[in-house]
Length: 363
Image (cartoon, rainbow, N blue to C red; front, side, top):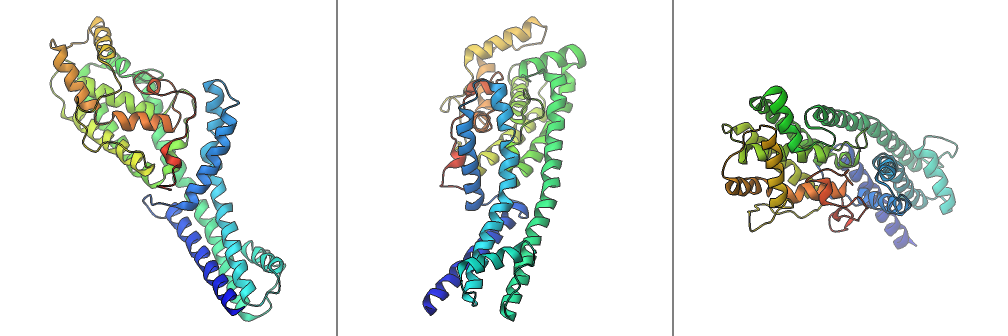
């Protein structure tokens, strides 16, 4: 009996400690680490949504459904942590002399939720009860402080995504962005946009790697998506450097580098394999030469200055795009992004399980 109590105490202590570390990693630690509890909750939630998605036959219906995925997943974490803490402390109460598991669970629940209807029988139980009540309050306080951080990062992200509609259409495209700047502002004003979006990429690099659930928070407008916006800006910068007959702009190159590093870091969080040093043509891109030429023809028809050597322009564009192509398409598929040229249309609007749910790299 002593050995059994020792093993129960050991397992209970481990469960409590592991749960607390899981909460700290999720709510406090400013980086993403493998977290099996969060992974289990996310996997269960996504399986349920996968079943529900089969009953929805249009993208707007799927989008409305998936809008609930991230909030529900987030709100399921605290009850999961509290349940594991309750189970862990139940084992300790049983070891300290509570006669049955039912009474141990009852005392644990009373202590965790600070209800106080099941008083402890001795001073060791009293001390344990105080520690459990403190943990319960701590988890609730951490969640309360976590939600403003989530929505603050979400608001910053979506502000830029919404503004892009004015400059690049809906859904945003590189073609429309360049054409509108040529008509309204002048192509020399694009340099300001590259600097703005370089900062935006740095922001999502920090926020979406430390708070991975942010990637699944959908935009208020069904046609908007942070990953579609990222693709439009990166393609516009790539076209500017490769195909437009204007002076070289280092800001565009820095924007592309900031963008593909951010997308690559986010895919790594979700255990999506992407090449670290891709090279064209060894690594093909998802955009075809025919699509590229079609965009150049449309830009030329609107008076945008295009380089005469289209073959070199294609090689240069592919050399830029290859850096972010796989990460961009993988994240568009992972988040079930809306249809958009050169990004959303490279995937399917039907839900497919992604590497995010493989056990090899929980988050």
